[in-house]
Length: 301
Image (cartoon, rainbow, N blue to C red):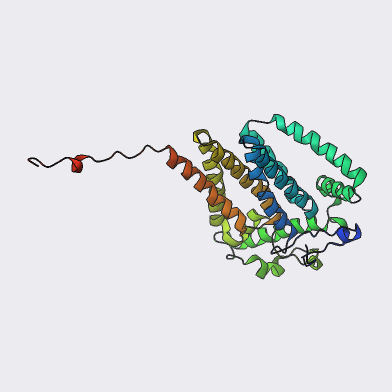
């Protein structure tokens, strides 16, 4: 952002006079960039809510969460907005602190009203969020190209699956054969050739075999984290695990609109989830008994 070099300098952001890009650095897609930011705020939020720390540490965690949320808002990624809300809901539910949900809702409403009064482009953020609930009415319109294209991309993926139901068309084959399956009316000028929906991508590229394996994998990971929580004894690790489960649950919403199945962050947090459980289990394991037989002095010594 300092250099001014970034991807997707959206016209609406330029028109509003803002200098915040929707995607920057190594991210060429605003949804993936926003998902990355989401994974950076839910685990710290879980630690902030569930683990007692010194005031300066809590302040540092709170600042990181606030900055991350601001970045997610600037991304204009509606799918990540919804995914983040689900992640926070799961986090509070696992923490048994659902009363905080009303606090967050109240603070959010106050923040929205304040933004509308003092920030010129806040109304655009609100309008973009409300457009999520007007998709059916606006389907097919120029202003809803993003949502319309996603529906047509899923239809193309289903067409690939129906012709190759068992093993699909092959890993990462969707972009290569999409033009043959694109439904009539697809806005090709939008330059999108990814399915933008993980389940549709898996069906198209890996068939029913890959679909079953993927669903099993996701459920296995989430349930492993969920059922490990009652046994967690280290309060810090338990807080981290809550954040990881909530993050991976939010990922499922994000991937339902982004289709970023190869997202490194998703696999990174999956590995960290099992690592956190393993570290806590190892700390609870009883110390091995020492074999004292070899330590006894020999007879007559």
